[in-house]
Image (cartoon, rainbow, N blue to C red):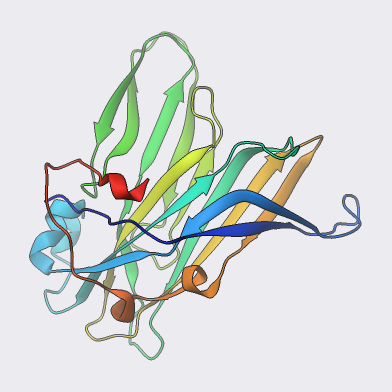
Length: 244
């Protein structure tokens, strides 16, 4: 099954660097460096879960009567511009899932991208894995004594607070579009909400730690109310050009 993500409305968001006792004496606002799209949300059936990267070992513990969703959005990290010399070195993108009034919380059943690493040796070879039927980068390399450096890592599978850690790495700058997607499982008919949080660190003369000021349409998502019909087409592993 190929899940096609349609064109998404994007928002320029400011990065807020707080004032600190030993650093900036006043809050700094950095503009035109980060864009985040409004989410794409669609429902899945229980039978579709294996084809979107949910571990078969989890299926026995899941109920066909529960609700299942895909939540996807794009973060765009822009290169230095307008005289700003601060380059992105790291970003954390977290999603807090909740279902007020429900007996149990919603959880992330699959995350994409999952993990990607790069090695500094010349034996680097690119491969592709597709746990959410959305192309995800990964690498293979032969052992030649080179150091491997992870530049994408996902955490929180099976929990209500999943997140991605994106890092600058040799050959993989933290720049451009990053499509982040997850499969969410929740009790049937629950009022499922997702709260998105984006933090980023940049290096100028020193490390600047910031948090994105997200608009309501990006920050807080009502999954049942936002869900739209799934778009399924093409060959597994293809990603709709409309997301870029």
